[in-house]
Length: 386
Image (cartoon, rainbow, N blue to C red; front, side, top):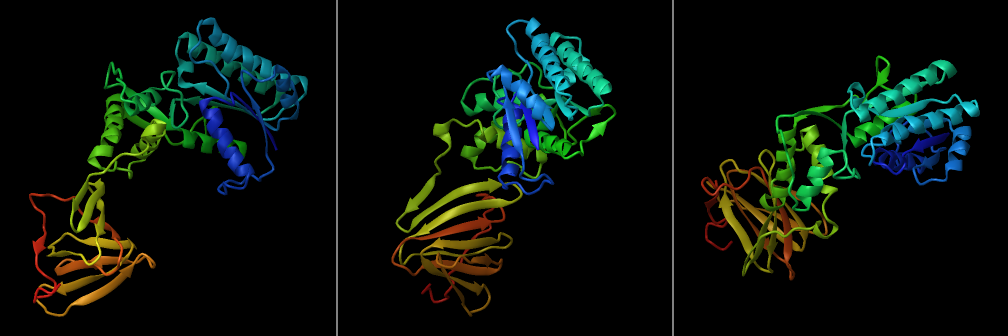
């Protein structure tokens, strides 16, 4: 199948081509398409003669090219209507009645230069479909966000993510503005569904079935919270679909020299203890490093429960019910990854039995609260040997 993508270097085009390339290379398995795909990529700097060749051979056209921020208003019609006319004339010339998808905008309903040009492109394509019998698929996209979107262009989300990630100011005129967002991965999935012959239609238009409606102020707060999470260690609420997608988008705008961030290591002669991640509903994860021969712990909990995973070195985790004498031992090693649950009501400790540092990943079901630590000192061995 030959697929023509205009606007190939644009935001949607780059993401679509990346996924189609995955399908072609057999890396994406969740589609009905075969790997027999040829991609014709056309953009503003392409050889104009290629458009005629591609229109002759295309089996499907994704028409994503358009003008959003021209220097002159006349460029709206030139880019959003004129190039569409050129594309359709080339298809007609070769008698190619393959399906054509058009990237339009919800602003096509508005009486402004951009909206008028988008509406003109839509009408042109509808007329083309009526005249040729070709299937035409018009998507009036709302605000599309995600990786590779150019900041300070036509996406508030891209601009906010870029500026906050780079410690630049943002301007918000009205936080109560309601926005409708679609995520780029959902857009790409829908476009590939259209290619497979199963677009989601509502009347004469197609749409991305997953939309998110949110106030502008909430988006701003979320993006700032993502920035702060690198110091608070608080993981965003990724069970919320929009938060998950916005967080992924924000990370894509981090400066290349700032992918990493430091953690506070609490050091003493026994080793170190470092908090890694925190979540209000999923507890926290910490990294414990014990020097050879060191024993840590010697306490029990009412409700707080933990999971220990030794990833380097070797040691033993010991347990005793607080009102009994029998001690239970679990030998652990980074050579065999094994999670040990720390039940409530058992005093417990962990001892490094090796000759090198022992590294343990520790998960606890609640973020530490110094006002209510739920941690009570009690040696595992009543005689104090352990």
